[in-house]
Image (cartoon, rainbow, N blue to C red):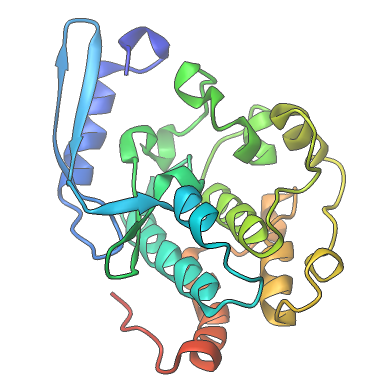
Length: 239
């Protein structure tokens, strides 16, 4: 990442050192980080995996496919580990979620993760490709916290179930801006076979006001585990 894109080199390296201490089955590990001239770099664990966007494009899971619940739970387990260290990812989207060969999902691309006390968004070239996934509070100049990651998690869930983001066909930034002021279409309207509990959890966590979302990934996991049990059997060990 170019240093001039609003990143403070010392802060970037401090955050990288924090991430190096995180080992979790649903997080891609940060192995090392450093600087070279005008660039900062972060070396991540190498995996035989494909990102969720490519995985879904190749397999077209149905709205009621139990793998959707599995992927969403795995993403939350990874986020819970990050949030436990007061780290906010800030860029949860299908391209930053990896599906490994064993079918497990890992949260990847931690290069934009920041400690929550310093997580005000700088819209740089590194984030332009994520415009469709911006939470409302960041578009409005606010600060990111765990609820911002939860909002992006809910957007991924909406996309997995419906096959599209809310307000499809619009410019990504324009669609993100509309979500600041307009409710999204109910999932049951676009995917009638979706489980009502999953639909409710996703829609609730797409609230424009962070205060109306789940406050932590742990809280949201507790709500989601009954869906896992119904679709996949015994719930995963809380790693």
